[in-house]
Length: 214
Image (cartoon, rainbow, N blue to C red):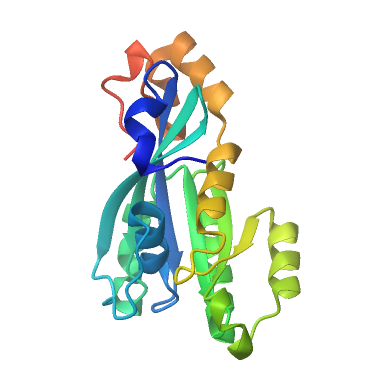
């Protein structure tokens, strides 16, 4: 997988697809740290909590001819911002729901976010469950088998990640990119123009120039 370093050449003659991705989860589970690691390959032990939401972008080259661009909305986890969440997951093509493996209550909160997405978001949304802070395994409060079983039963992608050590961070986002309906999107762009708006944008299609997945 390739990200920022060769993005300029990645889609020079191939297909470029754009998707809206939202991160959800309890405060302090490491949502912003995951995004920072994915986008900038950095980690900050003293990163402050997100207020409202933060917006970033990153591209992934799946192969020589296919590049996926994520428009990433990193939402605040504090309860007082919960009412704003629908504004960010509305029309989202994919979501990462994050919990902290050292905090048992954070998985319960993650499950409630999954239920909300399945009830109110796009019915075709791709959801990944991320058990973050896997580097703190000595303080583990949630068995990976428990989370994996829940993800399997609920139809989610699942990874245990560490924003601090970068374990499974790129793999998480790459798996989401591979799960997106790229062939269907390309066909929609060729055949019906703007009909692909709710499922992302084929940026290499002439008909997509005015589309937005926001």
